[in-house]
Amino acid sequence: MRKAARAALILGVLNFVAFASGTLIVGGDALNAHSRCARLPGKYYLWDKGLANPCHQVSRGAYLYSELHISSVLLTWPFVMLAGFYEWRRRQFSMRERGVGGDVASSESRIMAIGLGFAVVYFLACIIVLFRAVFR
Image (cartoon, rainbow, N blue to C red; front, side, top):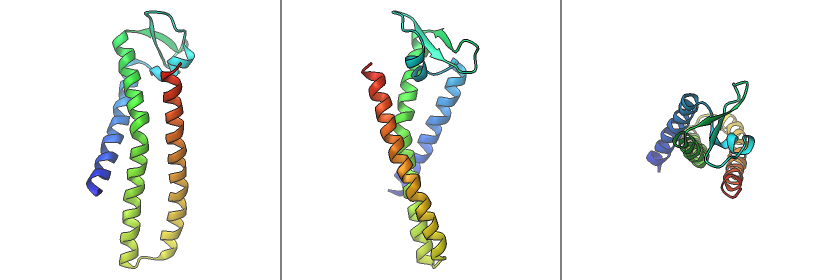
């Protein structure tokens, strides 16, 4: 389980970095363009908020790349958060076994419970966004 959690952390962060780099290279993302740009048959747009006119036309391949990559980030990021939570809990139990102060562990557990709550909300929000993007 420990190796799977670390792999999820590493791959998820690398996926996000690749998406951020790809967004800079292709000039925007398809998720925002889907809801904010005009939809014309046979034309594909990406959204780049740094431009004066944020909607700009791109090739079908660039649009599909952006659409698939943002979907993969939205699907993998909750697993990254859960893997991070698992790693944190594993270290917390390790600290307790070594006799490190309980005050530190209890305050950290409150912080991580809040973080886990945010992860669950984020996961549900991602599912809603993907559902709306697919069935629009």
